[in-house]
Picture 1 (cartoon, rainbow, N blue to C red):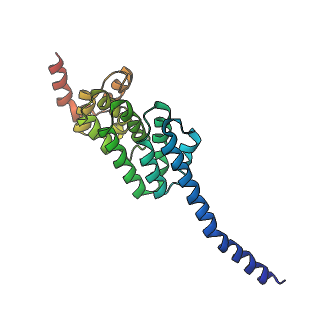
Picture 2: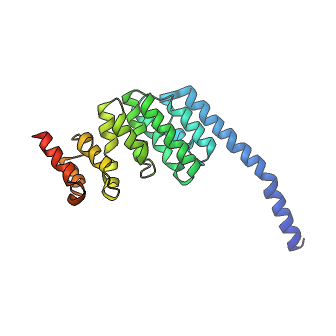
Picture 3: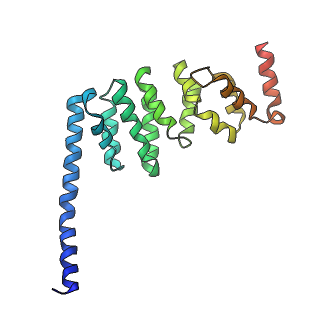
Amino acid sequence: MSRISLLCVALSAILYALPAAAAQSSAERDAWMKRVVREENEVPIEIIQQLASPADARALKDLKKAVKLFDKPRPLSIAYGQFRVFRKDEELLQSTIKFLADEVEDRKVQQAQYALNALNGLMPDSHMVLMEIAQNHANDDLRARALRPLLGYFQNNQTKESLELVLDGFRLRHSGKGSDFVKAVSAYSLNDYRRLLEKRLRDRN
């Protein structure tokens, strides 16, 4: 058999196998989701991790469904942690950020904190929604926790609004240590923000 004939046979075999491989992959994903639905919090961690691979629209859809079935720390932490895989695709990333922001808003605090952690892992792309949470969320703890990943971002993106957010929203332990607060505030130019800082000092006194 000539080299050209061998090449044609090889290509034909590859092309013939592609639909079967895709179908098998889809079947596997269906099986993983069925286990998640059936076992919920008891589903093996490896199954949750498999949902995010490959990082495509199907994976995002499955993870969105899966996290709503969990209410225990371990599966919640693992499942929300998988959303980071979508940051390489801009469309999926924006959909992920919106979904996680809604989760922080809609779920109970015990579950919402895991969605918040996932947003933290998507910085700096998620900075706008984290600022919104830090400013307006109904829960004090979640507002303070949303500020933690923003502190470093604010050092290179200084505005009056961000300085006010640090001064008003920082809470020890939830937002960071005392040294984190000092470092964050010290990064702001005294020439640019002297009046605001002096006013806050007067208000505290």
